[in-house]
Image (cartoon, rainbow, N blue to C red; front, side, top):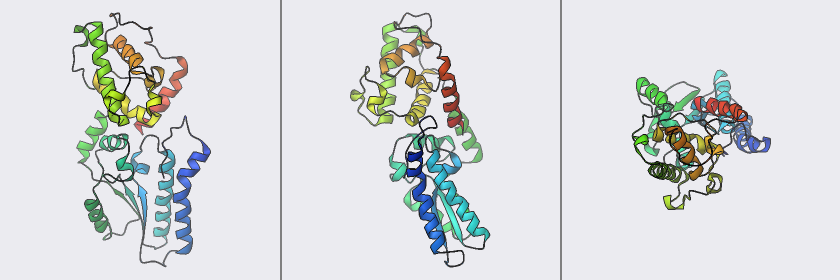
Length: 275
């Protein structure tokens, strides 16, 4: 069970709903089958506890419990292994928002196919280990490059200053609508420029992925709270236009600086993204 929530939104009952099923189930198995009573015990955990996926702190904690239980049983001579899976392609996490795939790409991995997953599992059975990260990985150099690039805004691909105010705003609205439609899995025509993002299903976890795509679009590093400070395509496009071409009159209020009260949220979002 998963439930996306950042630290700014966390609630005890939501944490319990996410963490307890794995912990309770593992405790029952541990009590019914103490070390030495089984030929093997494999616990299905998640690589999210290793890599970190935004908004899945409670889910990661539940899986970390499985890792710890496997290590404890293994230390007592039992053949218990915690398998830390990445998303399976088309199943579970793999069938959800693109933020999961983007986060795996950030660390040089990707969702795993069923056939390669079972082949990897078979390979693990040949070794005396207590925990294995079940993730297809690139080389260390490639993975490091991907992780670095994930937080580096791309260079602008357009000469924004050569556009008129109308052209600039139209281009930004089109880009924003495309990014939102992809992440929210909506037809682009359904992304109304005056409709609040939250009404279209945007949550704070998706916002981090969308923020990175917008940074690539405009070539600017953006505050983590920008999608909440400018909650429609129209208002966000105006804000971006003001940042891209400060001397151009694009209408709207000058909102170039963040509220002082947003600084803590910015730091928190950035910390979540970097871990």
